[in-house]
Image 1: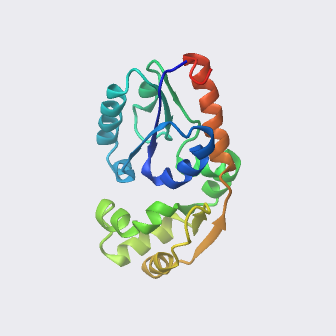
Image 2: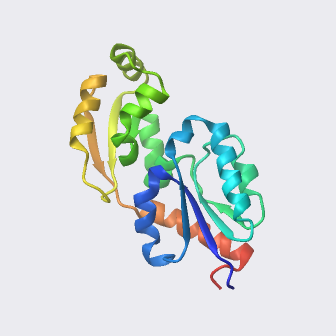
Length: 199
């Protein structure tokens, strides 16, 4: 079938998804939405719907977690399938490992947000006062963990800044892209089942 394939994804997983898709779907139309819209769910929903409406004649793979209240409404539309996972950390780690970190009250830093950490915490979350930021993080999290996906060098300068800002060390955990790849492949199989894309 000659229907085109659109892959819509949060920019927080851009590099990782490009690696996963470079062999399986090299011709896919990859569209990435700024991850900062995660902080503005209604705007994220409107942005996603506007993009998907323009791509209504294409089969659409949506690589997102439960990032706004209308995600199920979006994926129920014809020719759309979404990856399984509560958020991008679960897509990267898999359900079992993600639950382990969540139950341990670890704050997970993904590569893109680590490089933009000041924008995330000081601008979007409003923690311009380091003492308030430190108090919030230390009361709500037991540890800080950077997920090294292997697609970019570890941002050690930013991790040092984060450690100083929150007065908590950041451990580095190297993870493979196998869980993201499996999630994408599973979603692609479901998409092919309902659209015939790839047949």
